[in-house]
Length: 69
Ligand SMILES: [Cu+2]
Image (tube, rainbow, N blue to C red; front, side, top):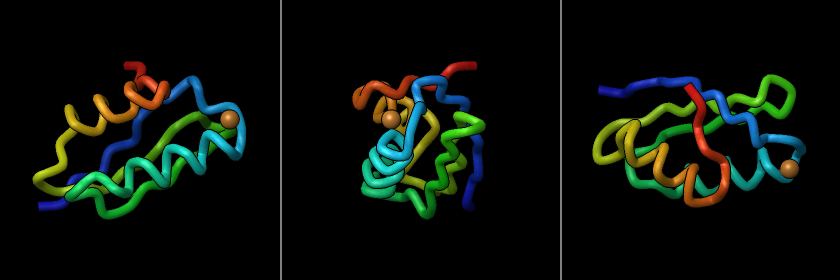
């Protein structure tokens, strides 16, 4: 089952952030798509196991883009 979640990531400030998030998160096993938006400061991520919300949040925090909310 694929899950699609939009995360609020206030640290997104420019195109570099968008690229960094998209290229890092897509490498997580189970992640199907990643679309970050520098205006809305969100990332919409589609994933299935073994990826999980917890693993995605841990990864984002480790690259200095913590999820808020
Ligand atoms: Cu940036």
